[in-house]
Length: 214
Image (cartoon, rainbow, N blue to C red; front, side):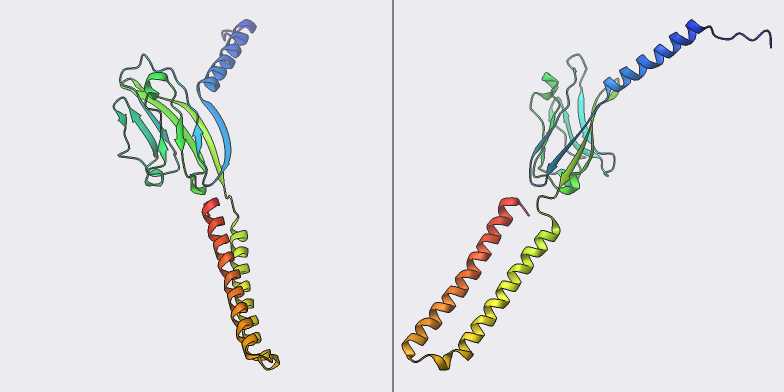
């Protein structure tokens, strides 16, 4: 035991400092952020990297929980979307000069709740690849499912109520009308009113659904 050499205090401190520096560099090299938004919106996932001196670089945005994992990929010649996941077809884009400026941000449009996940920005060339940034995206429902069901139920109740009122008007109040002309006029006016109410409610729902992309 007397031959065993223990590290001196300065050596331990130096080793501890090296571990701390390595951890800081590792944290700085891989940027992580999180963002929340709503379905139907668009968002820009940021990523920057100095790639000016790289030979034939390629940038790849991916999600490890998908198969295939490719969300968007760009080379010097342009976008390479052959292996892109079908969930993102026509909904992703990057700047045309991304590989020249180092702005590797990804734009996602018409967001869906299924877009929720962790997006990784990776740069690679013939020498290897480096994951630059992870972005956690949470896409929330703009209009909850229970509210959609409640709106549909309201329209159904309104339609049934209009039908019941119309039936009562035709079969209960007819004997009480003294003038045939007034009866026909009121009958036509009521039917016109009921169908107008149903029509406007339907138009309002259609406009609401299209506006909020339900």
